Length: 107
Image (tube, rainbow, N blue to C red; front, side, top):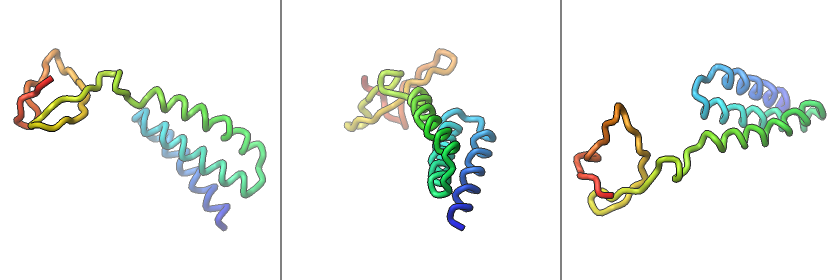
């Protein structure tokens, strides 16, 4: 019963992965499906499925790493009202905001 539930959950995760249009969400769902399929296959003794998802898991982790923003990719820390906060620099039409929640930005 638990094995069947794992298999169904893994299948639902795959469908959700293909339904997702956001790359980060799709990659996270793919990782979830890999983990669920690995658990299902280990309990059921399905070696081809273990091999497939054992190979796909590190590939999805590697690809996910490329989707997650880092500090070097346009992130910085600013001071607002005496405290610091991490922010992403996003330019829309060349405009750059001069305030954050009514507080002037200090570099």
